[in-house]
Length: 441
Image 1: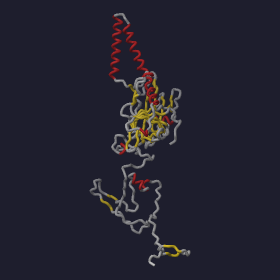
Image 2: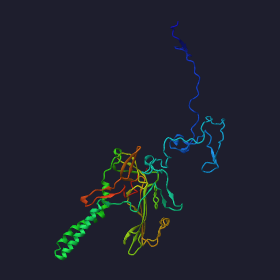
Image 3: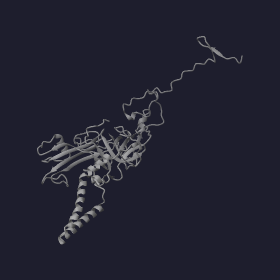
Image 4: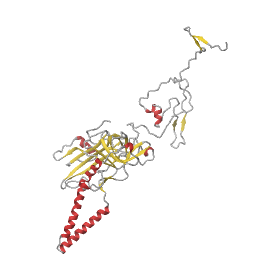
């Protein structure tokens, strides 16, 4: 009977083989019954997310941190008061004694707190921190106002303050060549004049004039059309694909603009969320009038006051869809080609100034007594389409566009009689119509 198969009968009367299994005792659930607290959007209450961004998280189970009372900063006379003990009969089922006390601070890296825009950006290029950040990050708001009633905004080092004319267009011609040509032309004119008077033959001076006049015409032509020739070169320059761009490559990227951690605002029209703002006050000088600046000539418009700022921003490439961080802040060299629009025009026939324009002048301690003025404002707003020319830099999977080490040259364009022109730093261009074709982001 030893080889007989064991069987048992089920409650419905059916016989099945095998032994009857003994009922197991029910086990308590392994998951904690404690519900997750409601954070209300506070990152300090969100546990692991707060620790990931190096934010101090107060342990609700442990006792509060010790209090330091009295004493000086050297710590010689300071003393710590012991924290109150927590009773073990708390209503929290998970409460109990813990070996650690005070503030529990856990960190998984050197990242800073989340920015208001939700974007983690870098600092200056010359820093030693992650992604080339310096002692200050562009995520920290560094914008200050002179007073509560003033509309004049002052930005910190994270925003680049541009000069009155930041676009410096020059010719790629050595100074030695220019001086040599001028000396030869002067000597030719003197020799030709002497031979004309002494020998009575004006052929020499006619030949010198025939050689000097075309050179002067070409020089004047380049002074007038040099800027437009550089703009034509920028527009015809082919767009590069960021996906295949290597580190140190000079590229041109066209895409939609997104603000960085510090959005800018125009000072007169109060246009929000801009990456570049420009407000310029011009004054017309007639015969014997007052000059707006030291280089102001008669019967022309001169710049009396200028405010131009640019900060770090993002551009999304149309071709590859990648987003790159454009390092235009922290004192970077930038050449913005943005045409401003006239927002206020004061002439001899129109002397009634608007209250907003008077307030704008008073905030900057500018007078408005019998002056012919014109206020122009330009900007690049978030969602606009721009073209950026710069050098690619990759650091820790972060794609950046930084100012090139050398000036950008257009080359010699013989068909247009244009000499090689150049511009320093990042080149940023935007369409003339700034209010049209803005993509909401």
